[in-house]
Each structure stands twice: as C-alpha cells, then as structure tokens.
Length: 296
Image 1 (cartoon, rainbow, N blue to C red):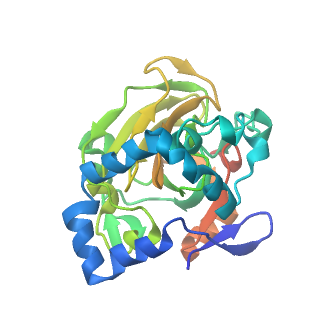
Image 2: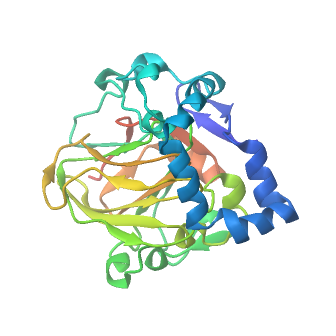
C-alpha cells in the first residue's frame, strides 16, 4: 500500500496502483524477479508493449482505464472516443483551465502531475533513492564536471503514475540545451521496485538536459523511463527560448520519473513538501502548482 500526502486535505491518500498485482509479483516473488531480469527489464519488452499501445487494437482499454482510475474526462481537449490508440489517450492534453500556471517569476512551479519528494543540501555522491539505497549524480548523468556544480543544492524527484497526465512543462522562462540520451534498462519506478533495485535510476534509460532558467539559474532536468514506457518524446526545440509552462516532453505508456537538480542558494522548497519528504512520504502535486520560491 502506497500512501501519498494530499496538500488540500492535509491527509494521506492511498494510491490506486495500475498493475499492482503484477508489480508485486515481479519484484517480490522469486519467479517474478527472474522474469524481470531475463525479460521485463529489457528494451524489447517495453517496445513490444509500446507498439501494441500505439495500435488501434488498444483503444478497447481506454474506457475501462477511465472508469477504473476515475480519470476526469471533462478537462481533456478531446473526447475519449476521438483517441486512435491507448497511447493517444495516454499522452492526452488538458485544457488550460485544468492546470493554471503561476506566472510569478519568484514562484517555483511543478513541471508535471505526480508525487514529489524533495531533498536539500544534497550530497551528490549519496542521493536518496529510498531509505538505505543511494546513487550518485555523476552516475546518473555520466558527467562529473556538471555534477560537481550541484554539491549542496536541491533535488526534486517527481514520480508519474500511469494514471497521471504524462506531459512535462518548463518551470520558468529560459533556454534548454539539447537532450542527452543514456541507454539503459526499463525497471518499474514504483516504490516497490525502488526498494529492491539498487541505483535504479542509474540503470534505467534516461534523457537529461541543462535548462538555463531566468530565475533559478541552471537546472538539470532528467526524464527516467520505466517498464512499458514506449518512448520519451522531447517537444521543445533545443537552444531556443521557451516560456514558463511551455511543454517540454511527454512519456508514452507507463510510469516514469522526472528528476530536477538546482544549484545551492537558488530555491526554497515549500515546508510541507520538505516535511513529508523527511518522513518518507511523497506529496501529490499538479503541473503549474507552487512548490517553492526563489532563494532570497
């Protein structure tokens, strides 16, 4: 059972996990673990399922998914019957009113919908995956000089579930460099897997880029793929100015994670998020929502 902090009610909600039985079998049973290592973590498995989700045959999954996970169809830009495949639905766009963006330049907004953990004054050689399991920033991006610039900074980990809106947006005005691709596996990013696979983020396929933000200095933005994620698609044009709230990328089917790194003395994360993170609880946030402020 995964519990996530709800900022609106000041209570914990139990997450309705897509494929929960499969995840527990795959990462907790001896047989399942064997299948993960031999088959499920491999690119061809996720690509095969991704191809199915791109096909017209997958449309039959849409209505049951909407019903089982209580997807709000009133905020979609398309009617559910208009989608040509499950992936077409999965990367659905929302109306602007559904995700209002805080335009105050001193406010840090969430880049997407998901469950957020925040860490400050970070040790880049011992970043927290879960309690007792760590990884390093240099391993994650495979670039030591850049990693060293973020010693003592802030790390945000935004976990997207299959039920979430799966498009990511820029947190500020600025310019993003070209995305760097790091090949890897396709483990699940569900907490069940994170508790059992050492350095999972460093093992999975990922893409990262430097975002030259107008108000928060240079930010490392990392998209981590996961089981059944057909692909990570970059929507932006490298080295061209973007505005706060512009779309950056999207994930095709599957859970996934976005990790942001800020340099020291650039941001102050909201207290409720920091407190819950210290307790080991993720905080549910939506794209465009305030999660912090510019450091003064």
